[in-house]
Length: 211
Figure: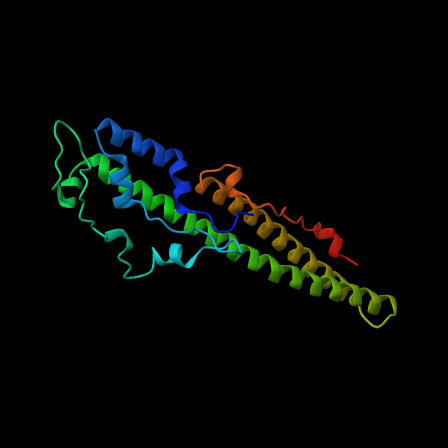
């Protein structure tokens, strides 16, 4: 699992953002000013490793987080001579700056989506584990009733079929959750600093829930 309280600045290590900043440097851009204008400084994860309110707020309807239109006191470009009064409308005409802004927004969106997917799938897995336990108990009772002569074998087959279906659904969700964790790791730029010290608990195999 990811570490709590991850700072957004770590996303600068993502290859796509690093490449966008490299293109800015080629255009004689002031990287510090560009980051101040377009890179939100916030905490990505809560103490529980879920998406922070600040990160979710970037994508809420009506949010102006991506339209802050800063009044730059530092020049973004230093080609030839300094232009201290450069306006953001002029900066946006340059494709390197527009690409940098788009890349940063995409990076924050990927992190928010990956955190949300991981949380949703983890909740789904918990629900399916409970359903699997219920189906396993139903299959066990059906077998007991059949052995006692109070139920037809068709009831046993139906219970076993539903148990197998529940097992398959749990395996699919568990696979999707692992894929979501990989996607989140990639969205955060990778590296040991993204991972929490607590080891990931390994779940039991589907067959362990059978009677």
